[in-house]
Every structure is written in C-alpha cells, then in structure tokens.
Image (cartoon, rainbow, N blue to C red):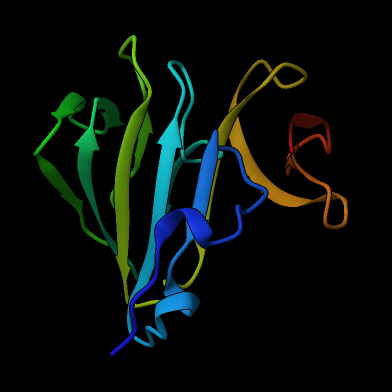
Length: 155
C-alpha cells in the first residue's frame, strides 16, 4: 500500500497549468496516473492526439473539460468521467470560467507511440508534432515534424 498527499508531489513541467505525476509516487506498475489543474483555456495535452496502445480515463473532480473528439465536442462536468480507447483522437480543454481539477488514468502505463497533431503556422494546417526539451529541466517545446518549426513553449 502507498499513500500520498497530492500537493506534496513535485509539479511536472508540462503544457498544463499544474500537473502532479502520481504513478511513481504510488508505486504503480500497470497504470499511469496524473493529477491536473487547469486555468480557463488550458489543456492537459500538447495537441489533438491518440495513444496507440493506451486507454485513458479522465475523472473530473472540479469544474469541466470539453474534449475535441472525432465525433465532435463532449463536455465532461464535475463528478463525470470519460474513457478513450487506444487509437481514439482527443484533446481536453478547460472551456469553463473556473479552474478545473481532474485525474487522468492511462493503461497500460507505457502506452506506446503517441501521435500529436497541432496547428502549424508555417504549414497552415494541423500537422504531426514532437515534444522535446527546450531547456532541460526548465521548459519543453513542440516542433512540427513537417517543417521543423517550433509551435509552442511550455514551462
């Protein structure tokens, strides 16, 4: 058994307002578990994406998230959960006016390849991207795989 206090887990440098990785802190071997808080307009993902081998469940504890999916937008409110299977594209955004808090659970823990699509100004469309360290330990950035342009920086 492992027990942790979420606010005592170090924040991870990521796209979201606040992400606390709980997987290792809890000693989980088969799932990935993250706690998020998002300001209005923020997303927990670097772009519209899919995991080749991982399913994801999002459990909204406070506020709401709006997910872009292949079937259209889906709003998930406080006390609701949503599941995405392997290979399903999605991206959640806090479209509310208040800060939102939620848990993201992925299984298996190592979900294989992730395909991320983001708007690229240089290409004029949504293109495949990679995430890399801009300044190791300080910030990350997204880079278009088609034209090599940096399309976002996250601290």
